Length: 214
Image 1: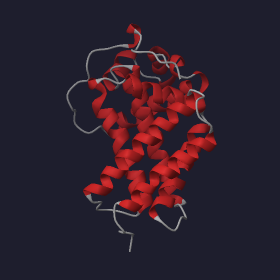
Image 2 (image 1 turned 30 degrees about the horizontal axis):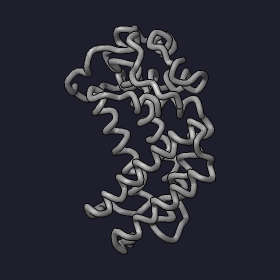
Image 3 (image 1 turned 135 degrees about the horizontal axis):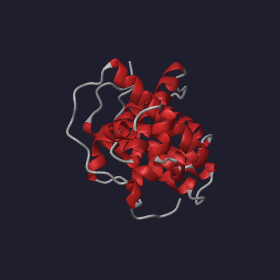
Image 4 (image 1 turned 90 degrees about the vertical axis):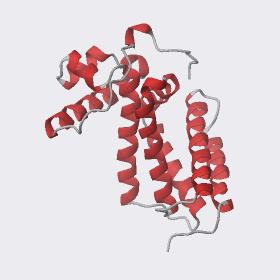
């Protein structure tokens, strides 16, 4: 993955606005069209293919309206990643991992999520690049990605009330998974190496206590 230091000036917009009330049904439908258009453009051509004007045209919203939802394409692509992870989470819940231990189940889950991203390499690259570019103004969207990833891992562990030690292990696992995505996308790691790294870091779960789901 190229190591650009910042987003091109043409994509930047003012800092994100303060939190707004929940979206209406119509606004939520519009937001979903925007995220769908973003994912389609990114799937075809990666980060550079996601141009805000094209997203607006494809989702049939005014450009000004698009910027009210997402102040920049970095905000948009990070939100797209959260949406993709949410969809993955639903898929994983329909077919839970089968490992006997929590660490095995988490490793299986993360590799399934990784392989889903592997099938859409341009989209994966665009979303990971957006996370890399994200500054403080994108913190709410980045936090949503982190919360969704945490939820996926905790579901695989079978935990509703993790201990601080378990949450710490989950954070390290998240960091490793994200790093594995970056190294794979940049061609510096094979799928086999990613699998080894994920399985290795997931063993941290075994060190945080014997709490298995009842």
